Image (cartoon, rainbow, N blue to C red):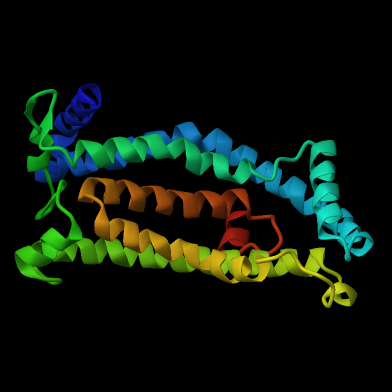
Amino acid sequence: MSLFAGLVEGLAELLQPLFQASAAAAAIVLFTAFVRLLVHPLSRASARGQRARAKLQPQIAELRKKHKKNPEKLQKAVLELHTKEKVSPLSGCLPSFFQLPAFFLLYHLFSNSTIGGEANSLLSHKLFAAPLGDRWADALGAGGMFGAEGLVYVALFVIVTVVATFNYRRTKRQMAVAAASAVPAADTDGPQVPGMGAITKFMPLMSFMTLFTVAVVPLAAALYVVTSTTWSAVERAVLYRDMPGASPLAAATGG
């Protein structure tokens, strides 16, 4: 923890001439970008995996027809198909999984008043008027929603809402395309995977869970989340621009 604190402090000192009192916040943004660059190869691999899974949809549709009265055989057949084609259904989770240590490091670093037995000097750093160790509740208590600290959170909430809306629309389009290609119209009255309908409705809304995270974690961790989710939205728009259901923006980025 002390080593990580020293890294953040060192980055803040380098950025201080440019960002003044918000240098530590800028250091967190830079650190987040570095983490995302490290994870980018996994994101590219995840995109390749999703393309491979999309190519398997016609075969999965045939398996649904063949095993429409036996969900257990259907599940086994789909897993065997993924194994045969060397496609992992969990590859899309890897980028998020490998980012968790960085998030928790920031969370703990800005949640502790002491580091290595000494006062945590990072807690004195701010993003404009808001201390990096405070939470939204502290900002509300200090001056309300539109106080100097509250406005910092308003700006973060606006960014998160824009990104979440973009992700929501994109996910809805992709899930609609996947459902249309995987389930023939003649089979829509057949047995469905238990709970799949609820998952399908809820999954696009998960993008908005970031709002809750930003509201309850220390501002430093919230800044990491906002930067990372914004990066992720842009990255996915580029990597998945040729996938069915890609947004017009994503398609435009592909030329």
